[in-house]
Length: 232
Image (cartoon, rainbow, N blue to C red; front, side, top):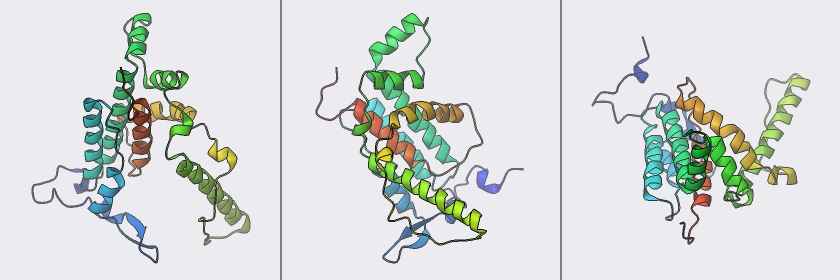
């Protein structure tokens, strides 16, 4: 028997938060103390990802659907992978529309076989439609790399010192030049198709931290459809 939280909601409890949501916290306030995540927090975390007005309407609707699914994951925890899958589908859709000439040529050469997400991303990079230095979040991503490295160093010190716990502050950590020059696009070409396939073909993977996917997907689509540039 599956747990009650996994079953179809009734009309009486469909607006309640998923029980697992109640375990999530955010660090907030002047004292930086943890508090429960609210539906307002959920909205704030996803509403900031906006596509350029130059993106086709179909793509914008596809992306807004993904955002809505993420928002409602506050009520149904299992919506997180569904939201992420929809975001990846939006990315692939946007690439196919923007690279329609490449898609047509690929199908002609490959006997009607569609290009994969990896093919599409690589072609967009090769033709310089996508560039690492145009990602608005690249400093944030580089800083995260630096903080993860610092955390690993702290963990290693705990093991070598036989410590069970340690208090540390990573607010002073800054990214190195190598972190700042990280080839994000190569990483995305390598990782994103595998994540997308894992979700598309059915998976037991369940994680709520999928906003990074929305950040990357919206940034890529906005590079494909930049503002104030007429796309033909």
